[in-house]
Length: 208
Length: 251
Image 1 (cartoon, rainbow over the protein chains, first blue to last red):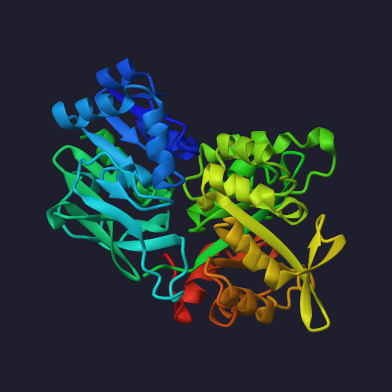
Image 2: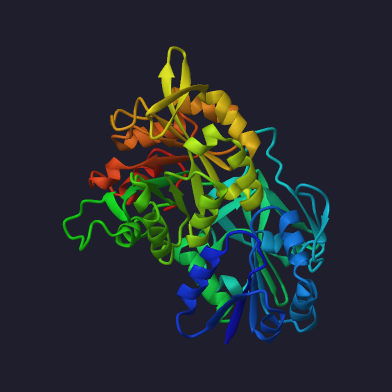
């Protein structure tokens, strides 16, 4: 099996690569590339993302044909895709970080700044927070409710259809931190930095 | 609920851990990979490397350390010490660091913070503020605490937030190495001035000091070196103690 981590100059993806390689060992081949043919032929795709919503969308669009290839992979062919952090946020129709920017429109909704209640909550939301699992998700197999995950973000994904939400976390309000819609998975937290429990989520995705 | 973080800090010199855990059963106390594994297995919420390599010719050794360590470290790894430019930050991130802490360069050239936070995102830019009390204010020291810049630390903290820093690592030079506790006044003044998380550092001698840093200093995270280095307490003991005192921690 081939799992491709999309390398589209979206910032630092070394930790994502390290953790997937740790979990994959020799069983699964992990590619790190923006090569469209390799993405097309892979079994699963990981879409990481660091920095702002706008910078990530711009970086995707800068690689000719990449967005079309991802659409074909996730929407037409319905193959498993995992978005991490801004990778998840880009599933939305629109994001408001820096300036209003169109997303991939895979899951209807918007990405807006977390309400810090006039400074009561510090932003970015950095550190370990518990997740409240709201529905059975394949990537949460064997993961206990209230497990701790590592977060670092200032913006949140607000999907229109609440049925896609698979977990929330409590920071200022109930923030969506994981979604599942058919073959599309996303986590706002960083499984690659969430210790052994995070590696388990990665293993669950690889084993789908 | 967001948990308060405990961050053990390791001093690295010429690619070797020089101040680490002094466990007798450790095969090689200077091996960063082994040291980091002990901390992360013990529940460290993040790990911090401080590169204290003095000579320029050995500066590149930190990249090897980060590269080797990050392959086996699945909690966030922050690297600081001698970071001068956007290019230095880029190299450390490519080697597998999750965050980079900038000290002297941030004071001498705040543009580095602005540029790097734009380029890599605020989440990986930590500004390290070394401050010492002078009369009724705190001043920023650079070059590992040797140079007094005369810059007001609290105003500087605000400026760094505006420049895009994601977190501030605040060290009291008066307290560093003394084991008498954090400079609580400094921590709480900076924490109330900025809306980004503050990591308290400098002066921890016992577990109550960690409690004070969070409860009185309003720090989001507490960093300590020697209490862990010399095996006085383990990270696990520290977390259990904080939990006992009603502080939310990841256990």
